[in-house]
Length: 413
Image (cartoon, rainbow, N blue to C red; front, side, top):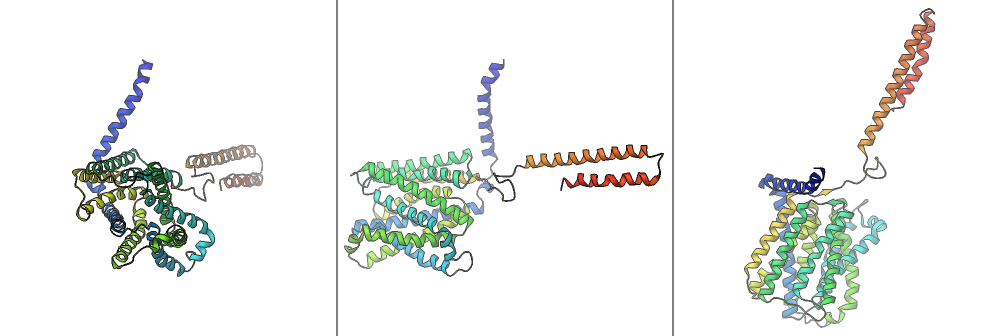
């Protein structure tokens, strides 16, 4: 009987967990999920996807109509705008938030962050020269699991089972989108060196995840202006050096006119707005949630391409958008858990152990009570022995016991 019960225990536990999960989903109310904060976060996330769509369309126009392929120049324009706006605001600050104070203590951290951000943008654009659009769309989703792992270790974020299910659903939506591209014959890009191109996409995804984790930590613990100002400063320096080394010949070949200038300005404006508002959405939710909402950016580009570039329509695009949206809603329906940092007044080894503190208090109280009872018994015995003696002697014995009682109470203090 014991062996039979032990054999049935894992399955019973699995059934109980499954029923608890289903009951938990049934107990959710739409009003509790679709709050004003969630709807605002979702709307702003889709706004960020629309901005990414704007950068993709302007880049495609520059590449196809005017044969301009200068991703580093485009990135430099974005970082220069960030530097002009937010770094200037930091320079005008006074106190600890001043740019000089930040550079004295954290310059190397923001230098590394600027390098990561610049190379993340460059490597994903460079990958288009070696691999196909399908590979880029699929492998670019690698940013989400990397981001979850980094958030687990560095931001102390803990996820529930529903979050992992939601991520898988979103990735299924991306798979539907890629399948629609293959059916429509939109497997654009190059096949000159697929292995190198796929590697660049994976490197870019990892760098984006690092940048987003640093961004979430900074905007939630420091300020949005500090993050954007430092990224703008070091991003401008790094991208200008890289631009002078890698693209100076391509820049000189550009035949400038008002159309090319307008496309460059539109790209820079979309990127500047994207960088400016993305920290706001990350602070409202998380970097992982924002990246899930950005999965619809390719779909926006496809929908715009139906009218601008005459792409073939497929019903799978609608299915993909719905599936990604459902996964995003599921991810945000259950809040994540963030472990609190160790208190400086508590245990130096981590969070204070309230159970051990309570045990210490109980032991101290018990010691005081025992000490008090012992003193009282001694006092009673001395009173009985001093019945035949004079009253002053008894009073002297009572007074002599008071220091012991006071000492007993003082141990608790």
